[in-house]
Length: 248
Length: 299
Ligand SMILES: Nc1ncnc2c1ncn2[C@@H]1O[C@H](COP(=O)(O)OP(=O)(O)O)[C@@H](O)[C@H]1O
Ligand SMILES: [Mg+2]
Image (tube, rainbow over all chains, first blue to last red; front, side, top):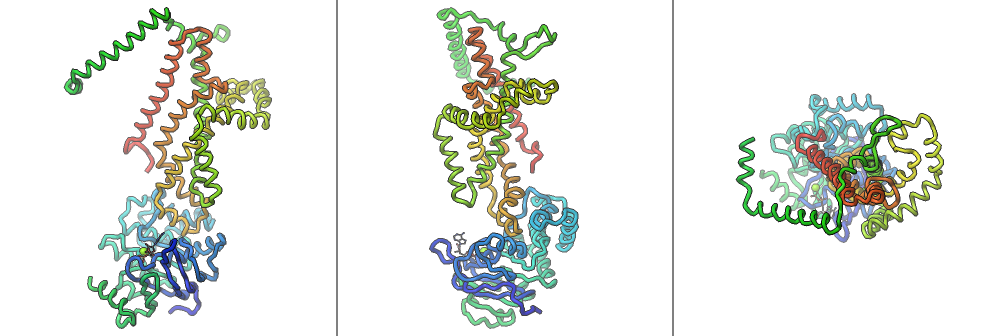
């Protein structure tokens, strides 16, 4: 069960793209080991919110404290935070010019500055964890979508982050590959990792989430544990959204 | 083989015959004009001697004017393109930098080069930059020192006669500065062609901007721009004729020299044109052969 130490504190966050407000007064606290699943209609600001957490987007107002470090304009802070926060993208974003093994070692070697041999053994360990030890010497383009996404997860894990962010990690996958990725994520959740997942995989959410978040129009509309979220959400729009998704 | 000839013959039209005939008549007319009206005596026999001559002292064949010039052209072009790729890569990175001042400086450099005639650019670079640099670094006397040494074979291999080293170096610098702007644009296009997700993935691993460029973006971008860079290299060979104006003794310079000593105007220029053509055309064939799918080792 999650300890009561906050590791991510989002307070009154605003985000503007030019004149367009993508996030409005968003507040969310994530404790160590906690799993948060964010859902909501397309364009509701889910990606923007988690991209603020590792500052792929700069927030326009409010406060964001990650692992005790306030995110502001100091580059050192930003890089320190990014080392502790892994991110998995919808489009995998593997480095196509590097082999799987090199994809996994480039961060530890170039950013964490650990010796190459150590980085390689670490990479093999995490390839094992995502169940594709035999693909180490292939290039990303030679793998299936599901395998690529598992490599992407392993690449993040190789930095040994304290927090993992997932932005619709299964949305770009063929249906038959979704489960292999969700299984890896479930195992990761069981290992105690702090996770924020943007996903519409409600089965997965119900199984691992400690906290469900529903967003709409750049605002958090509902925060609840899954037991309540899935059975009697307070917000009618959240209910409508769930009905629509669960129909499929 | 027969089949091939047959199919070529089938594709020819009587118009093709007319076009070829007109061309032959046209060049024949010019040829006759040159011979009759200018009273020009063709002396093609001169040319081979100006490519290679027999050195009585050393008792072997050595390069003469034209081949010397060609070798200098090749040397200058190789060094200039290496330098241009380095400068151009920095420039390309500057063009996409976060810092506005850096971006503006790179842009200014490019626009200046684009909007001034190449000859003027070359003179400006020569007098304002490479001359100053060569004087400041005392390259002149350093090169003379090397020229006097006994075992300077390595230097001579790379730069030819070391007494002419300063001139070659200024040719290289001037040409590289000139071409770097175009290489910079090619590199920028290459960087911008890399999907944004690559940058985001690199950043979320905590990479600095330098590391992101060095390990993720540039390796992919440079691989993408290899074909246009190869073409730019051929352009550079052609552009290199311009540095004859700052007395670098490359092919064009030697041609001028040849014309003034022998007055074989047409033979000299036709030979030089042929030498440039063979060099550039064979490189262009080579590059397109290497670019063929499945040929390149690059993924
Ligand atoms: N870089 C950007 N520039 C301008 N608008 C953006 C940008 N990124 C996202 N947006 C807008 O912000 C809103 C939220 O986007 P996003 O966070 O991607 O939504 P979601 O992930 O929930 O689908 C959308 O309306 C989107 O068009
Ligand atoms: Mg999104």
